[in-house]
Length: 38
Image 1 (cartoon, one colour):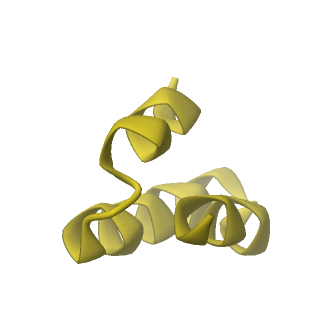
Image 2 (spheres, one colour):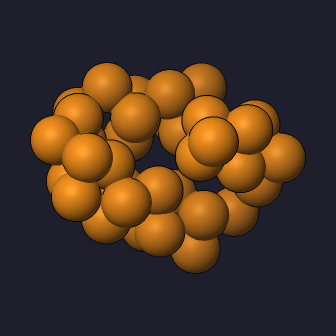
C-alpha cells in the first residue's frame, strides 16, 4: 500500500522521512527510501 504513497509524495521531504520509517517497520528501509528518492 505505501509504494503508492511514495509515488504520490516522492518530492516531499516529509514523505521520504515517513516512508523510511514505515519501510523500517516492514524491514525494507533501503529499498523504499531509494524508491522515494527517485
